Length: 155
Image 1 (cartoon, helix red, strand yellow):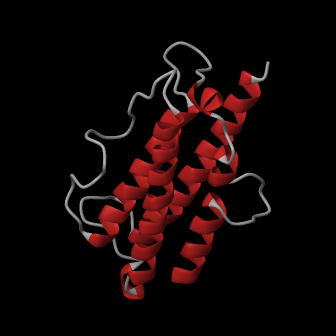
Image 2: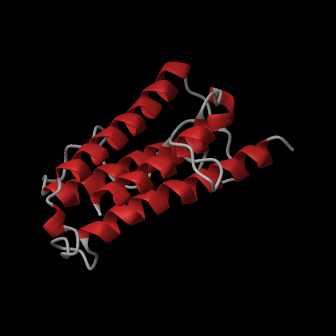
């Protein structure tokens, strides 16, 4: 089961897959102006979705490892406002945080004892395996959302 869960995470994030663009592919080479563009008032930009995806990789990893809350690099949870204008260094830092959180999640999955996959994670109605499958689905959901935002921004 571990190898299947790892394959799902990797395909959804940065490995070749049949379904099309994964999360890393959706943001690869994306200039700051496109990452910061909002499709409408009150709507998230791509930059905010990147940080959101990083957070939920952290949250799933924390459930797998039993790590306490509070070690995510940013204060708060779920969504963080990102500027309509910023600088390239900030954008690259947040993309690097996404990549790092993905790497840490993969390590947590590799370290998980196989007998724990079908068990329910403490404080969650889901099994450990379901949380990992959900993390992969979350990446693909936001990859599609990012592709739509990019298309809208070209109009």
